[in-house]
Amino acid sequence: MIKNKPLISIIIPVKKINDYIYENVEHSLKMEYKNFEIIILPDNASNVKFKKTKIIPSGNVKPGEKRNLGVKHAKGEIIAFIDDDAYPRKDWLTNAIKGFKDKSIAAIGGPGVTPPKDSLSQKISGAIYEYGSLNYNYRYTSGKKQEIDDFPSCNLLIRKKDFLAINGFDGNYWPGEDTKLCQDLVDNSRKIVYTPNVLVYHHRRKMIKPHLKQAFNYGFYRALFVKKFGGNSLKLTYFLPSFLLIYLLFGILVSSFSSYFANFFIKTLGIYGLYLVISARKIRDLRIFFGYIFGSIITHTAYGFGFIKGLFKLQ
Image (cartoon, rainbow, N blue to C red; front, side):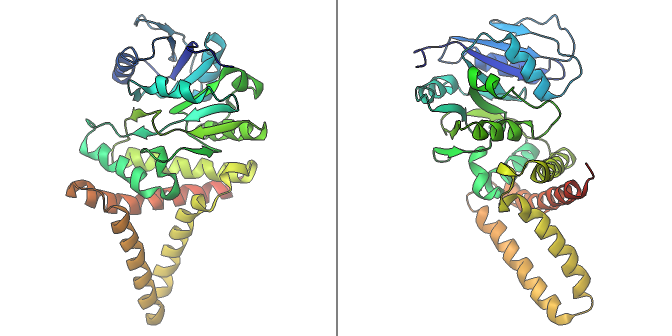
């Protein structure tokens, strides 16, 4: 049975100490739950010092390897993974620890919400994920509590003993190392639960190039995981953007030869557009609304292209 207030080790992989790290640590030190340590893993040694924090240089390695190194130095019973460009709400650990009182739960994930002070460009990126992720939008806003089999490591807490039992992250992958970790937990008959009030704020990539690069990489590595591991990557939702991209290319080509198909093609594009408008109905800022419509189209295209490229990549 878990202790009432066990030590929690917060692990933050990062290339170098940056402004986001200062923000993250500042909010962490203001949390309600006080029994924690922070482990920051930059590539190189740093003279920067924070309260309750260890800074451990990792060398130029992938985030999964950094997190594994952090766990080796962690003294906590619970490991809390968070990205450097995220920061916790003050009740983050308070709410998480309640969930771990259920000993059948190995890991808990919570939403990474767009910070209110993010730029307009970042808020558009956040809206695309929040409103355009179909049945996965709970990752970016508060949804209903549920058992899950995959969750991003920007806000993922796990019992240290369960982490060690599956040998931690596979350092060969990034992005996607968190998907592999979650699949390993599920394969080990351990439970992962999404808990909406275990919330962090997660800064978004700016539109357009950084956001699209991220979407492309998500699609590319998801396809690699479909081929290599199946499991939690074999879901229709992950295939839909590539289906859309293929249909768009096919439709444009065939429409030039067939007026009948061109008429049908335009109508189906109208249905897609209507879906985007309906999904954005809760957006009140018109700048974000129209940015979401346009951004969703190019995001689906980038993800779909990445997914197709990943499927056909030779191992």
